[in-house]
Length: 131
Image (cartoon, rainbow, N blue to C red):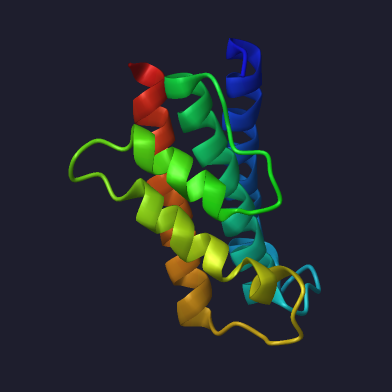
């Protein structure tokens, strides 16, 4: 990944997170029926984009295959001792299908948890990009 690619994925991560916050604050008033699933989906997308930016910055590459576990393995190569970014990404990826394709509706607690995980990954991304 080029520096420009990294910056673009970082902006995507921040934008997905900002969109999730807007849905959290205004979604029901705007008529969004499945607010929690949308928040969860945006959290997953923010986490993936943040992982791409972290890996792109540190390694010059990102996982681009169909197997999302490759992204977890790549992020694990970057993560510092005590940094649980790879585990956090795995938690988001584990619910990707549920948030984006399943008729199962997420509860408020699960949506809040996913949003919190995404915030941590975006924070880790911002820290990596300051290095």
